[in-house]
Length: 460
Image 1 (cartoon, rainbow, N blue to C red):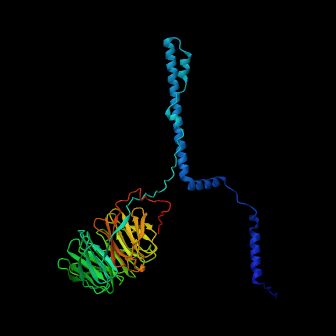
Image 2 (spheres, helix red, strand yellow; image 1 turned 90 degrees about the vertical axis):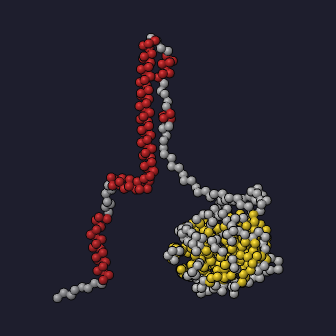
Image 3 (tube, rainbow, N blue to C red; image 1 turned 30 degrees about the horizontal axis):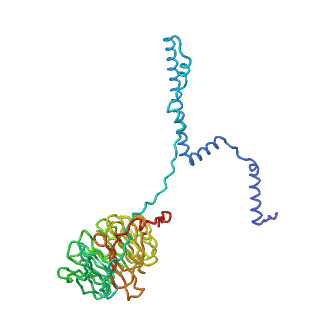
């Protein structure tokens, strides 16, 4: 019995590979035959896929040129026949004709259509987008400083009749001032901690206030007394807003929620949850989204008031959002953060542009119907912007009240009066400052230093 020779696996694999190689080696030296029709078809498909639009335009222009050339040739032939007939008729009538006239008649006539044979369709370059030139705004200047509070002045609200305004401060007192003269009219006491926000009702004789004592109060201005309390917040209440058309009050604060209250019954209609940190600013409007909130969690949320749910969350900011302002006439709003100010379009919250330049926390903003946007920083800087173009036409450092420290230069809140011609700011030096436009300024004395290549709209 013969002994079977055993081979290693490597030897067997090598032999299998060699057999396979020998089996197919006869075909390795033969290149596949090139089919010219297939190659031509392949290149035609590639050309059509890449240059289809250009080829179509070229083919159309060629066909149009050939058509016009044919029409011009036919017109020339018809004109030649007419000329020959005219010459023959003239010779028969006069018996003899002038040779010069005959030569002139036989010259080919040029028509306007024959001159315009180059009818290639021109592909016009796309016009580059242009940034509109900003509208000129007069510079603003300080015209009055009002003292009276014993602590940081944290909030301000102007009444709808434009006769007085109210301020709230860390001294726990709400003061009402005459707007024209700046004199104190009334002091309201009742809060046991800093007053953080004020709102005056346009339809009722009511003043609403909230503060770090978790209280939300409704003051009857006919009796100068508190008539309602709205209980529910678990921590300090930092911001509030009155709905412009329905009797609804929205408050928000350090418990990361915004609460919707029925003004009359004091019922907590909705508790808007979703933010993960302090809600620092809330605004309301009649159109959707009816509530917009900004929070220290770096987001802006748009809310459906009827459903009490969040419509969308804007996450473009990288740092805490402390101020939101609605444009009085345009369907837009702006949000402020230490990274920059961003403008948005309602109702979806489409991003428009960034306004950069602040090197500090932006605590407050205000905008008037003329398109002047003002922002106030924690270091006392004030920036004035053209709303439409984002052009920063003025910036300055607010003057500190004599006797106060340089660290007390922060601007906590600001608002325009009902006419948009006066700007009221409340500051850390315990004062209220009123600014007006400089009446003596002109476009020649304060020209627009506008360089469009610097203004870039970054899409994030």
